[in-house]
Length: 283
Length: 283
DNA sequence: CGCTATCTTGAGTAGCGTCAAGTCATGTGG
DNA sequence: CCACATGACTTGACGCTACTCAAGATAGCG
Image (tube, rainbow over all chains, first blue to last red):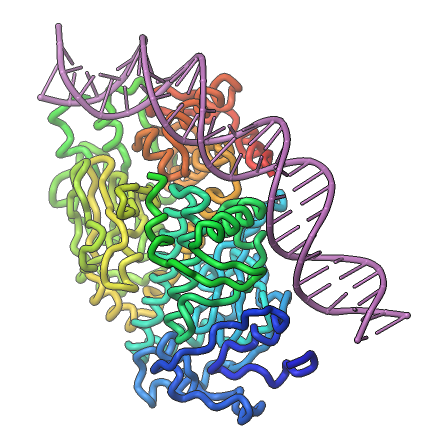
């Protein structure tokens, strides 16, 4: 594992990009657990550029992503409009606030953040996005993106032209259904963030954040208790409405209390139950 | 204006319900300004129960609400599935967290709030809803409502069975389009709330809140500078992630600074520009 | 007319932010 | 492969904002 390697690194079926980017971390990324999601995976050595263009039907994310619930022939129709495998390098913008909506984007590999900007330069992280999640839905209302989307590590996304998606979802009820579900889940997620920002104290917020990440990794077949953060303390703080020093102090405190082990970007949840119980102390 | 009057009070074209509910307030609600939205209004004295059942096409909100952009015949189709005029009395729940999604609801008259609940009893107001706005979109993802919706004053809503809406929006592209827009706008609004909760200080939050209300009243043909609050200080505080005392102090401070006049629930914006400038001081 | 919910205001405090110094990772160029 | 530069993180001391607790005023309602 060394630099110069990373163009071959990522398949749609693994998250190991992060292991390469953070290759010096003493604790590697959680290894994928055996799960139904992983059943169609090609081993790393078999990956080639052509295989990176896999159709939705052979993408390991199709249960999580937009094609969930589609029949084979419907998935094929969706495949025809999806522009697969657009790479976004770490630090690159997928889109910027104010830019016209062209497509929605499904994360294939990697990790991104959305940032809302304020005139005075303040910036607020509105969300972190991992594989199978859909970005850009904030732009449908006005035709313009409300936020920046930035890759936190080298990532691949599928580009889904919005006009064509809307057209196709008229013909395929299951697609329409699932698209509505994904928009609605974004709204429900936002309500959760509001609850967090509006009524939790610093340590509760961080605990909720860690448990949320844990649950999302678990849903993708990775360890729920050991994972690597892809974002800085400052980005976590921005998302949680706190300063980076507060995040750092809370991590340290959790560690001395035996709730987690934290070493740089690597996290291990030692006692998820006590972490969960911690939420609700500040009522 | 006195009690016992209020069953005749509200047409789809006025917000005056609040003037009756808060009839003792020295400053009445802003009167509707002349605007395109008001062109089909019946004067109050002509209102009858049958007219309360008006179709979307004759509803003064159709430019703001779900039927925006539909042709006459399309609007007729939508009309057939909409269960018009379900009254919700002050304090009544339109739906509750955990309840199964049946319908979306469009506010016709009145004012409602959505509240997210936390296990430990904490409650966070996630939004306030006025005429032309759509509620319940958080429930599509899971099939269950994520929050309570409560009327803050006697209100009327149109009930739109979700399954039928989805069906119909396959046949009517303009309806599909607009429905997507409304969901997306909810997401964009949520991002704005996150920015507010995550990075503004108390007085900035309140200023942003007042300006937002102002803008929404203006979009409905009412005064942008004089209006009545329909919610308590505690509800404003909950929405803004602050305590009621903080809201009260900020109101007082704004008043002594000449930014607003506030008397109980009635608000006048004396200097919207300085109010706007105030946002961005705390960077 | 009195009861209750809502609001205002004050005094004291806790929690998180600010500022600052120093350590540790990452990755670059010699 | 090592030395150094840079960005990320940790920790401490201090300050300020908003919270808590409390008392009193006011409005709305029966």
